[in-house]
Image (cartoon, rainbow, N blue to C red; front, side, top):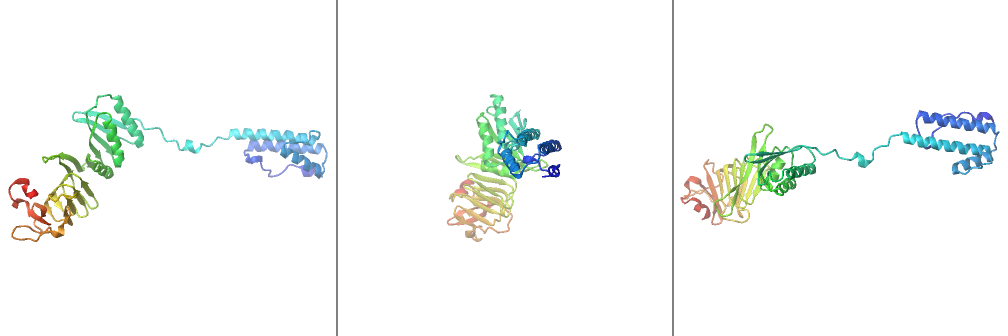
Length: 349
């Protein structure tokens, strides 16, 4: 075999994918040195070459052969260079490190005492961290806010019933009561209604769009749920208590109560009073022209036609305060000012 066959190889690849110009130069020099040593020891036969290569790959070489000893020495140096190159490359972050959340936002919870109670504002941040910070702040205050009614401001954060329930639980554990929820998110407003909380829905300019709150009744243990604002298409207001709406119930909206429904406005959607089966329930509005009117299990198609008694159908076109109730087995509507004297007795006949 001629000496030219051991010349400097072209385009030699690096072992185990090691890269870098410096490492490439070191390995090339070592390989060239191996070529020179092999040439100095004379040509080898194909059998000898095959035997020596197999020994180098397996890690066992013939120490009596100069070429084998040289191959072993160069192999050890190559491994050393590979190890050093691996250490020089920066390790990529593990998936667990990359997924590590940002540190909690400090100061995202504001607690202020007021003459009529406590104002709490929840800012930006992950919800579990906000709840934890709220608990920490209240614990640090000791009994200073105990017994206070809280006005909670959550801004435009959409909250589910369970999340609002977490705030209420945290407040109650420190002897406080959630009085009203202020928000610009309709989802949060609906969650407050579902939990029976007083709430205020505001627009971006700060104007109040709707309000809800509970009010005591003079009839036993009954309560009223007061809604200030218009109910638009797609909205459903359903409560166990009597419902008072200061606004309109527009087409496509629905209002359902197990007790009475009183609307200081027009009912043009669906109204269902006495939803639990109480036939003594009534529907009262400044004007009644609902798509459907139900009291207990009786629907509006059973409304009696106009007659000598002054009772008339739902869609009468007469803009006067009206009251709907069950008489016999049908719903009838009478003008409010033509009702018999005696106060609430007319509603319980």
